[in-house]
Image 1 (tube, rainbow, N blue to C red):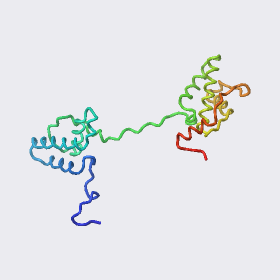
Image 2 (image 1 turned 135 degrees about the horizontal axis):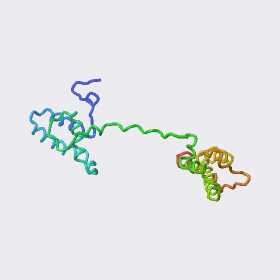
Image 3 (image 1 turned 90 degrees about the horizontal axis):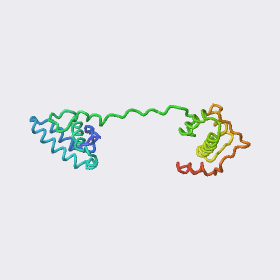
Image 4 (image 1 turned 30 degrees about the vertical axis):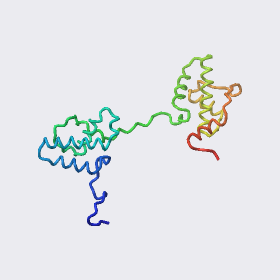
Amino acid sequence: MNIEGLDYNTQREKLLMPEYGREIQKMIDHAVSLPDKAERLKCAKTIVRLMESKNPQLHESTDYEQTLWDHLYLMSHQQLDIDWPFDVSEAEKIHSKPAPMELPQGNTHLRHYGHLLEEVFDKLKTMPEGEERDELVRLTANQMKRNLAAWGHGSMDDEKVADDLARFTDGKIQIDLNTFRFDNIPMSAGNENGKRNGKRKK
């Protein structure tokens, strides 16, 4: 509904940088329209001081003056013809969208064990038999069990740990559940993780 005499924001041109307000934008538009170049620069310097007062948090940056002039350049739609006191050639990068992040590639079926354990599996494939490998196997199996507890809300299956360890080391590591002794991992290991994620078992 339009009421004569009332000016609605929804009917106005969208502000490029709304944090400075519409009055600053009007000043910039006025500066662009000035016929004298020296007068345009004088007006631009005044506008930048006003912009600084509107956006004082910029002072936390060492190059805040550069940022203010970049903002002025953008808000003028690159139409303000002055001798710019700062190089504004890179100003448009402020509004450029960052490149999308690449999703991690790899074995998603290992997500509950994590990337570090995946590296350990690769190491175990090439380690010679001996006490050092036996100790690493013990540490790895127990960490796998803890991770399973965290993902499964307390569910810990020794057979799954043994099967996964054999599978992810290409059969190089086989643990005998009749003789292998896991650490005493409390059932709460998984529940505590769930609570940290805002989940509680009823």
